[in-house]
Length: 261
Image 1 (cartoon, rainbow, N blue to C red):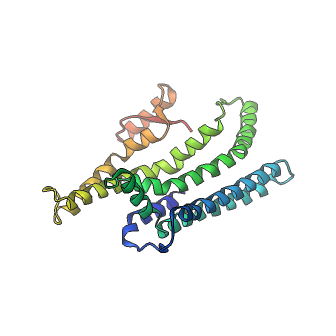
Image 2: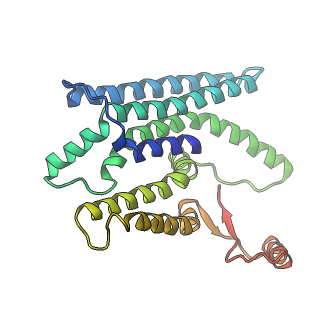
Image 3: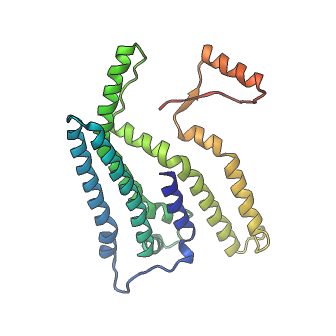
């Protein structure tokens, strides 16, 4: 998933250097159909595969059905990024910018056009996780019974909405948020240079870009702490053992965090 997000963001970074394949007579309804309909068909096909797999969990070989769905899921995610690249080639980002400027009468704000162009793909991933939730719940219920038998702690089951939101936080936002910050800073520096700001010139622009990227990199751990569901590890034997181990090996830590998956 992380590699696919990198590919999608790379396409956004270099979009302006790649000519869009926009037919002269392509209008908004046709563009929306080309963007939305393939994604709806993919979401429907993946939902059907999840339904068939859910039935297969009651068969004599549930592992075979799960392996097949895992392969289908990989194809589903790869195809979603391919469709996103095709959306950019069709000129979706250009159409979005023109629509914003037409409706508001001002230049497109930083990152708004990119986020709107990325939104259909993000929604497609969400539909995939929404369809997969019943299978995940079945597997967690089976694991819960095993924990009951072993006398281990049992935690509340996520709702469908909580499950989808958690996938966005753990699988998408972890990499997407820092990359969007880099893209936003890049656009800000570029716009400042185009507007003739004194502090940005052709000589200083690369240094501003490098400084912003380094700053975002340094603050990435703080971003992760906010993106993921983390809390300080409570005081107890485990915390004391970990702190002692860090002190013994001279590893400096500011805080020990518990990631609540």
